Length: 381
Ligand SMILES: [Zn+2]
Image (cartoon, rainbow, N blue to C red):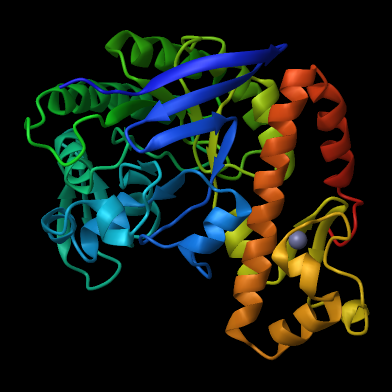
């Protein structure tokens, strides 16, 4: 079966690309940020809020949906889009990252990952083939291959073993993907290969070239934003992106800060997903045009200004820092919703500005402004 994914580059600014990604569930303007809907919902928000902040594509976690409510149940109810009531494009990860990070007991063998559920301790096998089967039942628009997620820091020898295994898994995943049943829920689903290699440029190059040789509809960079310094991450993106085919979309998985987004776009990346704007919102940290703002700080107790005077979101249009701080300190659920709405609006607005800057040839100016706002001395950071 063939994917219907297409990617057209509309404008360039040095290595950055502005494009249109066509999926079975709609067209996405890139570079794009994907809010993370871990269990089929973006924590703290309703889908109508996502539409309001301009989200056109979301990411859901295969590990969580496989364990609960189960991919079989979701398939019986018509697939993930219908089950969660989201008509736009959905990306799913392979489940590997959570199997590594959430399970206290897991083992990696050539066959795949064996792990204990973080919910009830039950034992599960996740193989490259099974990760394809689960995502086929979910019916996402973009599915990721199973990769091994290396802890940071790791030795070069360990990173090489892990990278080579990820390549063998990628080849198995591609074979499984190409032999999906004809009556799959989303026959136009596309598959992304995932480049690994830790923080070692030669391993990243080798992984990129071999993953491209297998041949996927798109490519992701995995295993970054796991604790390495930002400049190391940017270097790994540099050496990887230049080896990925121009005409295919590129996804930086699990990153990042506003600065990471603009730095990665400048290096040729197109898609991003991260829990930072949503998770930090629930902890009272707001991303603003002037840097990070911790709403729980006492200095905001009587501050009548909106969280970000430059922001046009619902939260900033209606409420003061003093009220947002009060809601947070009182443990009101609305605090999580209002903060999340603002942070996602800020992230998606940043992506809109990035896309415009690429068209205008002014991405470097925007990059400097974001770097300044998110320097260690900015606002509350
Ligand atoms: Zn706002």
